[in-house]
View 1 (spheres, rainbow, N blue to C red):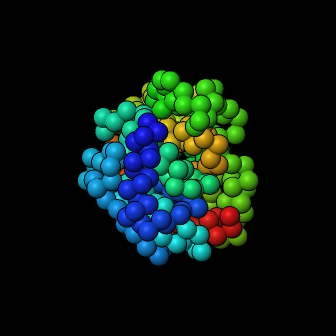
View 2 (cartoon, rainbow, N blue to C red):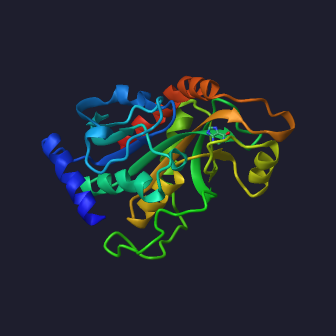
Length: 271
Ligand code: HPA
C-alpha cells in the first residue's frame, strides 16, 4: 500500500509542479459545482493517475482538481468512488490516503442523502455530527499499517466539533436552514424499502446514503479532521413514500448545491 501511495503521489507532484494542497474536498452526487469556485491550477483525470480507481458512473466526472478556493490551496475530487460500483473499501479510500500524503490537514466531504427525519425535507442541508456504518465492511480490515494509525482508532468525535460549530454559525449568518444529524451509510445501490427507512430511523439515523463513511473512517485513522455535509435529495418517510429516480436526486442536489457551496467555501476561508 505504501508503495502504491508513493507512486501515485510522485506522479501527481510531477504533474502539478509540486502543488501542496492544504484542504481535501470530496464532492458527492450532483454536487460537483463547487469546482466553479476554485481557481483551477491543475486538473488530472482519474484514468491517468497510477493506482487510482476510475469512477464507473456517467454522472461522476472523475477528475482530481488542484487550485485555490477562497485563498486556500485545495485538492478536490470531482466524482467519488462507491462500494456498489464493485470496488473494495481499500480502493474507495485510496484517494484519501493520497491527499493526506500530499499534505492536506483537513478533509471536507459532501454527499446526496435521503431523509429519515421528518424535520429534514428535500433540498435541506444536514451537517453530519455522527454516523452509523451499515456497509458492514471497513477500509481498515486487514493488517494494520501502524505508520498510518492505530489498530483500533478512536471514533468518539469522527466529525470535528469545531468545524461543525463554525459551519452552523456561517449557516445562521447566511440565513441558510441547516440541521445537524446522524448519517447512516448503506451499500446500495437499490434505494431503501419502506421497512428499511423505518428501521434506519428507529436505530438513530437522520439521513441515509451510500458513501462518506469509508472515507471518514480512513481520515480518522490518520487523525485527519473531517467536516461532512449532506444535501437531502429525497424523503424516506415510510407512511408516504413516493417512487424516487436518479434524475430527481440529481435535480434536487443541483438546486440545493449553492447553499452547500456557500457554507463550504466560507468554512475553508476561516480555516
Ligand atoms: N437512500 C440511499 N442513498 C441515497 C438516498 C436514499 O434515499 N438518496 C440519495 N442517496
